[in-house]
Amino acid sequence: MIEIGHHRLWHFMGLAFHADTIISMFIVSGIIIFLAVFIRIFLMLHSKKKLTYLQTAVEMILEALKGLPASVMGKSGEKYVPLISTLFVFILISNWFALVPVNAVYALFFDKWLGRIPEITAPTTDLNFTAGLALIVFFSTHFFGIIEKKGAYFSRFFIPRFTAIFIFV
Figure 1 (cartoon, one colour):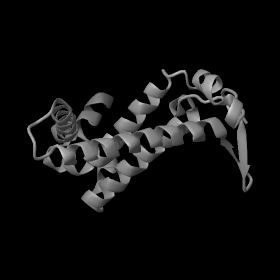
Figure 2 (tube, one colour):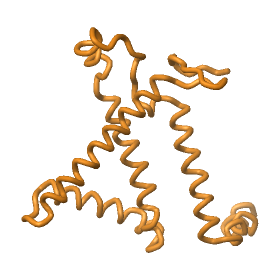
Figure 3 (cartoon, helix red, strand yellow):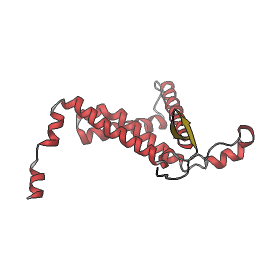
Figure 4 (cartoon, helix red, strand yellow):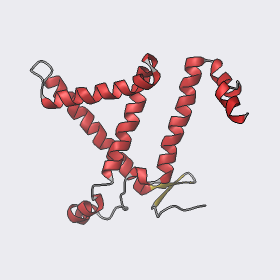
């Protein structure tokens, strides 16, 4: 087994899990859920009043996230916006989480009452976590390709294209 970095392990049913990655993933998920609920409640309360700067900014971000897949894949790309924007927001908040000195803040305020916890780093610093995200994207692209194109999806892997023939000639 190749060890990359040092992680405190939790064992469950013969499998080993990195405790710091799981804890930080739940913290990041909690932050995202809190922000989503806060923004949703804020937009509901202010939807009938005049536009605010926060509402304008949120709508601008949502339109940009909707427009990105549509600009690459056309009109059919809009149905993949939830997956793409979820991955974008999760990776963004995870990387920002690396900038916060979580361990120092925890040791300063909560160490006396809650005891020691494993060293918390951003979830994206763990190679296993980023490989898991890559596998999700890999399999979801093939899954959605099969759903969209049916049996013709696999034909594009076997039919030679002119550019491929031109390169090898």
